[in-house]
Length: 57
Image (cartoon, rainbow, N blue to C red; front, side, top):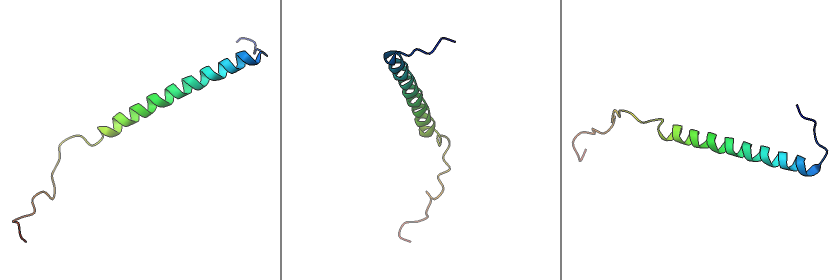
C-alpha cells in the first residue's frame, strides 16, 4: 500500500473519485432494479375476471 499523503488536495481528489464511483455504482444498481421491476410480471396472463357473463346483470 502507498503512504497516505498529507496534502489536502490529494485527499480531496481521492474523496471526489470515491464519490463518483459510488454514484456510478448506485446508478447502475438503480437501473438494474428498474429493468427487473419492469419485467417482473411479464408472462402469460390468466385473465381472471374478464368473463363477467351477460351484460346488464
